[in-house]
Structures are given as structure tokens and as C-alpha cells.
Length: 229
Image 1: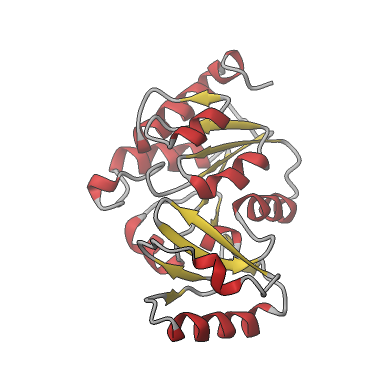
Image 2: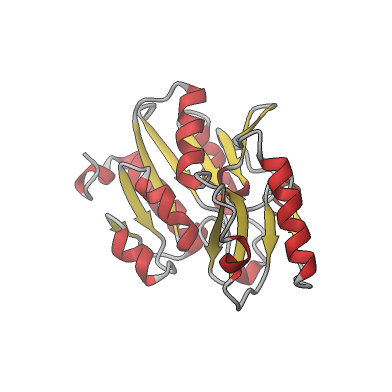
């Protein structure tokens, strides 16, 4: 079945990959996605950097990637930076403020990452109106205002010229914008409560096994009986 009017946009950590596997993709999940992607659109939308994806998702060949929470788009060998011209200067200023507070952080190609954050990091940037903060459980991503997974997948679809329906799959807070950009929202079974409450469909299985479940529903046409119109 060719489903070129459907684009599946899936988160990676705890959606395609399992934390107990250190987020390395399962062979069966990789094979299922690769087979699906040969004739259909499948996009990985993640907060991860490219360097981690290359290691954790080795051999995965989706239609494309939306990385760094929407800031970096990759289709085939082309890379698109979804950021305003002001961002490099702002990022430098953010780095200075984080260093002054002695907070541990890392730079991605575009955004800034902090792990296991317990304080209200937003207070440090309350005067920088072009900056936004996204949470993924206890981890934080600092990026340009208006850039997020939802914005990223819209840019991806625009580049591709895709005008069909988007099925979004996720598990955590930074998937909210992805859900808002989608026509049909799917939560894996291990998703946070707030994500399940937003979803049109909650899968029976966790992580990558849930992705296999979803792709089976799509390929069999069962997805229409489950609510996709």
C-alpha cells in the first residue's frame, strides 16, 4: 500500500528507542521503519543532536530528520538550519549567563542542552524575548523562540512539498508542539499522562514496539477505523 498522503512524524527517545537499551534502536524497529520508509513518509523528530543519532540509530533510513528540537532539518544529503539570523549572537549570550551561574551545559550544532535541571532556568533569560526553553522530562533545551518540533515538521513538509495528513507520535513535554502541528496524535503506551490525554490514539505497546504497532495499523488500513479521517 502506498500512503503518500500520510507523513508519520515520530519522536526518538522513549518512542522509537527504549531507555533500557540506552536508546539504541532495536533491530526489528529499525527494519520496520526502513521498510515503511521505502514507499511512505517517515520522519524522525527529536531533540537529539546529529552526532548522537549517528551512533544510536545506526542504519535507520527514514525519509528525513528534524533534529535539535526543530532547529536542524536533514533531507537526503541536504541540511537546513531553521533559525533566525540573530541566534548565534543570542546563543553566545546565553552561554555566558549559564557559565556565570556555573551550570553545566553543552552546545549542539544550533541549540544548548542542560541535563537534570531542577531550578527555574527560564529566570536567567526573562529579558531575552527571542529565546525559548523546552523541557524533555528533567532535561532542558534552549533555542530560538518559535522553533520547536511542531515548527520543524511544518518546515520539513514545506521543503518536501507535502500537503497530506501528519501523524505525530510522542511521549514527553517537547512533543506537545509536534502534536499541535499534526492531524492525528499518537502516544506510545509509556508516554507521560499529559501526552496520552492529548492523543487521538494511545498505543498498547511501549517505545519502538508501539511504533511497529502503529505502522501495522497504517499499512493494514486499520488506522482509519481508529480515528484518522
